[in-house]
Amino acid sequence: NAGVTQTPKFQVLKTGQSMTLQCAQDMNHEYMSWYRQDPGMGLRLIHYSVGAGITDQGEVPNGYNVSRSTTEDFPLRLLSAAPSQTSVYFCASKRGKALNTEAFFGQGTRLTVV
Amino acid sequence: KQEVTQIPAALSVPEGENLVLNCSFTDSAIYNLQWFRQDPGKGLTSLLLIQSSQREQTSGRLNASLDKSSGRSTLYIAASQPGDSATYLCAVSGGSSNTGKLIFGQGTTLQVKP
Image (tube, rainbow over the protein chains, first blue to last red):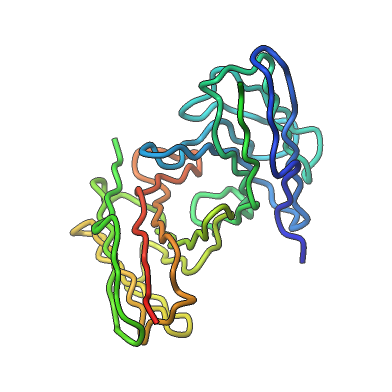
């Protein structure tokens, strides 16, 4: 069971560079989401999707873009990286409409922007 | 706005002790509450999910309770082992939001000494 798979595990970017964090799940979950985890701030929702072709903003969306062309994949794009985006990023998925179902998380991507 | 608090922030116990981790939330209109374990540098592993209509859930040495009316949940760990050392996070889904978003506490870091 692969579950939720995130790549890469580690990444160092220079300020202004762009990159895409990959997330894939093999559980046929409709709901996928991205969180960032920062010391003292906990986990905060960046973007989420309730199904292919549908995305919406979370709590801290600025500087990030997402798309959902398939049920399995939910990539997170940083268009112009900033030091404030140094964080650990987690992708999560849930079955169905996600209001009361269990969340499953990937292993995270540790991003440093210098 | 939903807020989740976990007390204590850190806990150190000798092996074999039974212990209780606390989680409180301000908005009782939740769909469910989920307990996670996070090992250093790793992702979040789901431990237990309690639906709003349930009072408790058990898995092995773990028992989670939910008192929605008072906004509290506890995670009871029986006969603790050094392998239980990790950060434990609670998260609620629901409240005024219907986005499937999880609101996390800051976590309790547990150390079980041999």
